[in-house]
Length: 109
Image (spheres, rainbow, N blue to C red):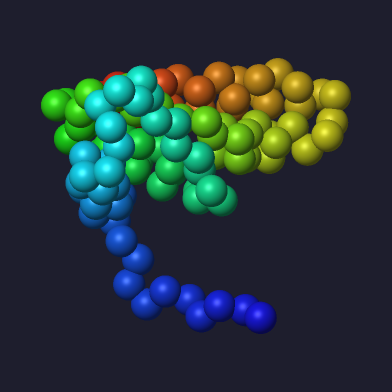
């Protein structure tokens, strides 16, 4: 069964605000950190959301980080295409995305 498309999609900022609110209301301060999954989001949206979360989470007691698979790999896989001659492009795409997500992890994107 195919689910209907969402009419209004939340912005990264809206997702971040509601996420931080929910975490503050439910997660004990003793938890050392929370890692977000990209969950099939685009690289851009996952990165932007993580950035927004960390921009507003300054007073949170936990480290807020990521465990992105697809959102780190999509550009690299697209550049590589399974071809040996594209390995350098694949590596550069992966490194670029990793650096961007690292900045987002600190809310500095």
